Image (cartoon, rainbow, N blue to C red; front, side, top):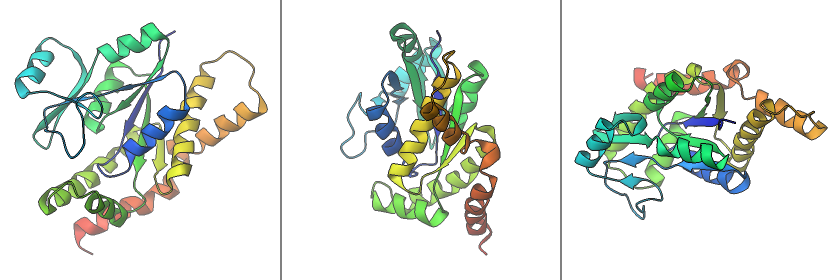
Amino acid sequence: MKPIVYIVSAPSGSGKSTLLNGVLKTVPGLDFSISYTTRPPRGKEQNGREYFFVSRAEFEDMARQDEFLERADVFGNYYGTARRFLRDAEQSGHDLLLDIDVQGAAQIKAKIPEAVSIFILPPHRRELEARLRNRAQDSEEVIQRRLVAAGREIENYRKYDYILVNDRLERSIEALKSIVLAERLRCSAAQLSAGETDILAQADSFRLRNVQEVVQPILASFATAVSGR
């Protein structure tokens, strides 16, 4: 059986990494694809843990050899997902979790249309700005650039299957976990228990068609900041 590929995207600072780590710790049989990047490590980041840090020449050589499922240029640095992670998941019988931006997500969906896409939103632009400042990794110029980029990224939310608003960490981890498990259940031919039916219902509440009222105020907070009103 082919692995289920989960695409998770979010603006920088939305808490995506923390959510993914929470799910990876509690859901068995789920592999994580560590992206390659040409940007330098930040803080306590380690090669092979947060990213594989490579030179531009190394990245471009991998691209020429078609070793990436997707790749993108973000703020002048390359990011990419290696094909080998999908092959490894297939061989181990696991599913695969991808942490990629909207550019990469579009590339993956073009190659793997059945991939499950999940977009994580901050609860408000002010909250995203506070998170970016609190992590103390970026200059003021970079923070403002990330906020502008976030406003552009979230406009793509309609292209995703599920939308999560990361307002409370534990609740958001459980929501993401329910989506992962629900998609596995949809692929199962077994009769569902009452608990499994509840998981499907919980996941369904985060489908794009069911979150419009929640999403609109968040979009408006970014639009208001851009217009200056």
